[in-house]
Length: 139
Image 1 (cartoon, one colour):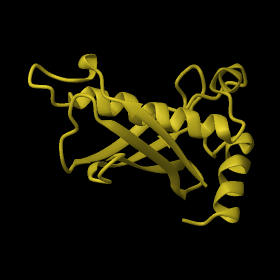
Image 2 (cartoon, one colour):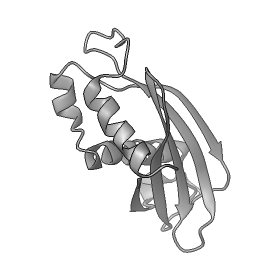
Image 3 (cartoon, helix red, strand yellow):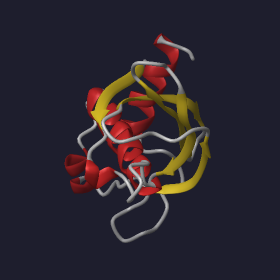
């Protein structure tokens, strides 16, 4: 399963030259991961009430080209891999009109408790949601 959303590039997303500022890409990538989890029925506020939070522990971002003011970008998010402790999200950001690849990214996420201690294994609610996706739609 892949989650896709579109985002227009506004002035606030760019630098003085109308080129997308790198932090804007990070914000859109996070939006993609959060919305993907919501599509799986994982409400982050409800998970926090269950003593589960999911911080990013590793990210690898390849900047391929620059987005510009007024571009419409498409953010795609999917699960690449699950381990007993982590889930790895693969993401891309492309220009809607041309299909030009701007960003290729990979984010590793773990499950921790509200006090910051690591869950030794992926909590069942997360494991079940993520494995269901991989078994039904392998990437």
